[in-house]
Amino acid sequence: MKYKIKNGQKYVLFRDWLHKSLRDPEFKKSYDALAPKYALIGAMLDARNKKGMTQAEIARRAGTTQSAIARFEAGRTNPTLEFASRLSRALGAKLEIRLATNGHVDK
Image (cartoon, rainbow, N blue to C red; front, side, top):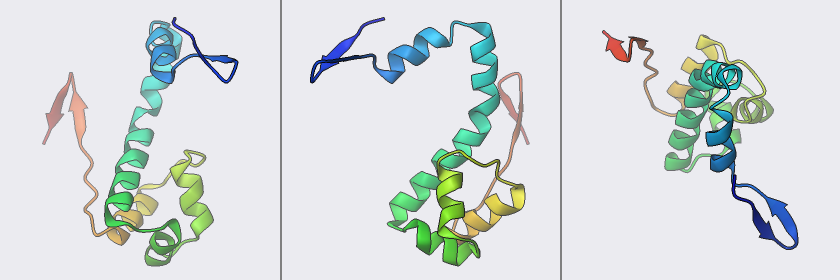
Protein backbone atom coordinates (compact mmCIF):
# COMPACT_ATOMS: atom_id res chain seq x y z
CA MET A 1 0.00 0.00 0.00
CA LYS A 2 1.33 3.43 -0.91
CA TYR A 3 1.55 6.08 1.76
CA LYS A 4 1.28 9.82 1.25
CA ILE A 5 2.75 12.51 3.47
CA LYS A 6 0.99 15.81 4.05
CA ASN A 7 2.02 18.34 6.69
CA GLY A 8 4.38 15.75 8.13
CA GLN A 9 1.56 13.21 8.59
CA LYS A 10 1.71 9.82 6.91
CA TYR A 11 -1.61 8.60 5.48
CA VAL A 12 -3.07 6.22 2.93
CA LEU A 13 -5.78 7.03 0.41
CA PHE A 14 -9.15 5.48 1.25
CA ARG A 15 -9.50 3.83 -2.16
CA ASP A 16 -6.11 2.14 -1.69
CA TRP A 17 -7.04 0.95 1.79
CA LEU A 18 -10.42 -0.31 0.56
CA HIS A 19 -8.90 -2.16 -2.39
CA LYS A 20 -6.51 -3.98 -0.05
CA SER A 21 -9.16 -4.62 2.61
CA LEU A 22 -11.60 -6.15 0.12
CA ARG A 23 -9.15 -9.03 -0.39
CA ASP A 24 -10.07 -10.26 3.10
CA PRO A 25 -13.19 -12.48 2.68
CA GLU A 26 -14.65 -11.55 6.09
CA PHE A 27 -14.22 -7.84 5.44
CA LYS A 28 -15.71 -8.18 1.94
CA LYS A 29 -18.72 -10.04 3.31
CA SER A 30 -19.40 -7.29 5.87
CA TYR A 31 -18.75 -4.55 3.32
CA ASP A 32 -21.10 -6.13 0.77
CA ALA A 33 -23.83 -6.51 3.40
CA LEU A 34 -23.79 -2.74 3.94
CA ALA A 35 -23.84 -1.87 0.23
CA PRO A 36 -27.65 -1.43 -0.13
CA LYS A 37 -27.81 0.92 2.86
CA TYR A 38 -25.01 3.12 1.58
CA ALA A 39 -26.35 3.05 -1.98
CA LEU A 40 -29.63 4.45 -0.63
CA ILE A 41 -27.83 7.10 1.38
CA GLY A 42 -25.72 8.08 -1.64
CA ALA A 43 -28.75 8.31 -3.92
CA MET A 44 -30.65 10.45 -1.41
CA LEU A 45 -27.63 12.75 -0.90
CA ASP A 46 -27.14 13.13 -4.65
CA ALA A 47 -30.82 13.99 -5.14
CA ARG A 48 -30.82 16.48 -2.26
CA ASN A 49 -27.66 18.18 -3.49
CA LYS A 50 -28.90 18.37 -7.09
CA LYS A 51 -32.06 20.08 -5.85
CA GLY A 52 -30.02 22.41 -3.64
CA MET A 53 -32.06 21.46 -0.59
CA THR A 54 -30.90 21.58 3.01
CA GLN A 55 -31.37 18.84 5.57
CA ALA A 56 -33.86 21.09 7.36
CA GLU A 57 -35.93 21.55 4.20
CA ILE A 58 -36.04 17.81 3.49
CA ALA A 59 -36.95 17.17 7.13
CA ARG A 60 -39.83 19.63 7.01
CA ARG A 61 -41.17 18.13 3.78
CA ALA A 62 -40.76 14.56 5.08
CA GLY A 63 -42.30 15.29 8.47
CA THR A 64 -39.19 14.53 10.50
CA THR A 65 -36.34 16.42 12.13
CA GLN A 66 -33.11 17.76 10.67
CA SER A 67 -31.19 15.62 13.15
CA ALA A 68 -32.94 12.48 11.84
CA ILE A 69 -31.83 13.41 8.31
CA ALA A 70 -28.26 14.00 9.56
CA ARG A 71 -28.19 10.60 11.31
CA PHE A 72 -29.51 8.92 8.15
CA GLU A 73 -26.98 10.64 5.88
CA ALA A 74 -24.14 9.73 8.26
CA GLY A 75 -25.19 6.07 8.19
CA ARG A 76 -25.88 5.98 11.92
CA THR A 77 -29.40 4.58 11.52
CA ASN A 78 -31.04 1.76 9.63
CA PRO A 79 -33.79 3.48 7.67
CA THR A 80 -37.19 1.87 7.42
CA LEU A 81 -38.87 1.52 4.06
CA GLU A 82 -41.47 4.04 5.23
CA PHE A 83 -38.74 6.58 6.13
CA ALA A 84 -37.02 6.10 2.77
CA SER A 85 -40.38 6.57 1.00
CA ARG A 86 -41.04 9.82 2.86
CA LEU A 87 -37.59 11.13 1.98
CA SER A 88 -37.95 10.23 -1.68
CA ARG A 89 -41.34 11.99 -1.86
CA ALA A 90 -39.82 15.04 -0.13
CA LEU A 91 -37.20 15.05 -2.89
CA GLY A 92 -39.81 14.71 -5.63
CA ALA A 93 -38.41 11.30 -6.51
CA LYS A 94 -39.77 7.79 -6.78
CA LEU A 95 -38.30 5.08 -4.58
CA GLU A 96 -37.72 1.88 -6.55
CA ILE A 97 -36.62 -1.41 -5.06
CA ARG A 98 -35.32 -4.27 -7.19
CA LEU A 99 -34.13 -7.75 -6.41
CA ALA A 100 -31.12 -9.06 -8.28
CA THR A 101 -30.13 -12.71 -8.55
CA ASN A 102 -26.78 -13.71 -10.02
CA GLY A 103 -26.18 -10.14 -11.18
CA HIS A 104 -29.47 -9.92 -13.09
CA VAL A 105 -32.27 -7.60 -12.00
CA ASP A 106 -35.59 -9.41 -11.62
CA LYS A 107 -38.61 -7.43 -12.77
